[in-house]
Length: 322
Image (cartoon, rainbow, N blue to C red):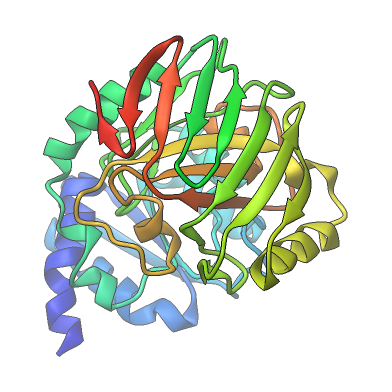
């Protein structure tokens, strides 16, 4: 029954999000546990008179790990690719190189069969694109951005010279987008972020998920210097330390969730899309306009952000002001 119910979501991914056209070569990268979703997507690709190719790879050991070289090469040669995996390959050279080669990508990371049926995938993506573009344009190139939350976050940074990214689940050649999150984001200029991040919603990685108590990250000169909190904070700190890579502490991104159909559930692409939420990405920034490649990229998600851009408040307590 679920295979039938997933058909509508698969059609949205293929037609609305990737915009598949007749005769295109579409690569679907997946893992054994995601095969039912991959089959539904492949059927939708075939229904658009395009050619689906399915590649099954072993699950990555960690988020941000590169896919096998053969998969990366196939991504570059495709007209479009869809990643249906448990651990993210979004922030990798493989995705960056494929987009630079003219392909376009949709990332369905941590997707479940239920997410193909209900939730963020039911959004009106063309409508959401309007808000997303408006917020993103404010962030790109800003001299000073300040993020605060009622929970205690107070972080400032510069985005001078940085492009904005409007990710509204629809892509053109040379672009990729996570689905179903609708988000506007920017990569802070390295070394400029300072302040405190109080994560009170979700860290949808390494089996943390929805937070039982806040995780507090202290930031100096663009990097996290210490992490405080309970058991979940210790889990994050220990995982980052185990990477033996100083770049995992880099403040890589600030993203603003703008999908009214998303809800917090402990899965990355639903959680970070919740309307009015804000997340700070740490680690790799290479795919977002920054210069850092790290052993991972994790998003630290907060409820109801207030964002001030060059003395203009564009969001207050999770409500858009523009």
